[in-house]
Length: 405
Image 1: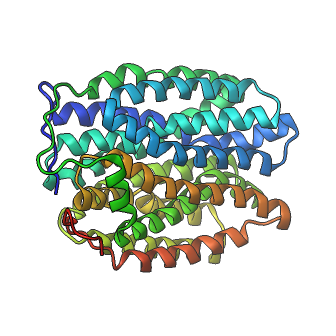
Image 2 (image 1 turned 90 degrees about the vertical axis):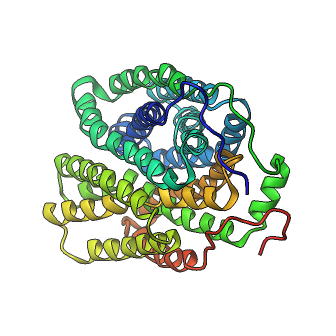
């Protein structure tokens, strides 16, 4: 198995974690608030929920499709270059989202451009640098820290974004966030790798790495689980505010719920990273997906009150991105760090296909039935499927030169 490359001179673990965490905080923090733009945009533009939902669905799909390409470029030419491009594209996408009045151009800006930007400014690219900087026995912990940063971004940015919308209007808020996205550019210099030593062991080409990974059953099962993760979290993140408003709960409940998701996600992702160092990650992933299914079932079963919303937000928040550290740690554990950003990008592609379906079907089935009930039950059924799919995952390093099992 290929071992991790040592960090370049002057590039410490603390520096990578700090700059990487701040980048993920900005990138993920901005996107977690997009659900608050649904109502003001469709009201002013005269669009349906499906129009907005489709743009968000395209955003997630574009993110997923561009993810492997961003990972390849980061592994080959340097993550910092990809991060700079991602920050600039993010700002441009937010500006287009603010000024356009046509559904197609809105989808191009809020969907395609921001989706591509997120592929170059979030987990897969940062995890590639961490995988080459942090020793293998500490990777799960480091991935948990980076994932917790994304959760912290949600906790911090949700109230900021609602305040900006209420005081500057939804367009003014997008202008300001576009400026914030450009902060990714200077932060990218903090993860610039120099004079990286070559990998020990046999070198793999991109084609060899892809054949090996996609022919390996455990990689396929990890992708299936991540598909479910994307379906659940993006449906909830985008449609929960509207779901609560439909049931007579105010914007303060939605804001509080999304803040709680972000807050408890900090603890959940960090705990998942720590537990992934001590227990089999496949069992950890199965438990997370199973508990999600239970939490969603109880949420739609009990009477809907502010208290039930806050309890659900805390529980689902603890499980929100807790799949990210163990999933990426298993990929690194099986295949090594040489092509980690690329392989992580492909796993994330399956996550974003699920995200596309979750957010789009949320709007589509609501417009068709006047309710989100069908999508809630789909999320429960998929959670059970993911729980079972992760149990047979094999975490041991794959033997090079042997046919995958």
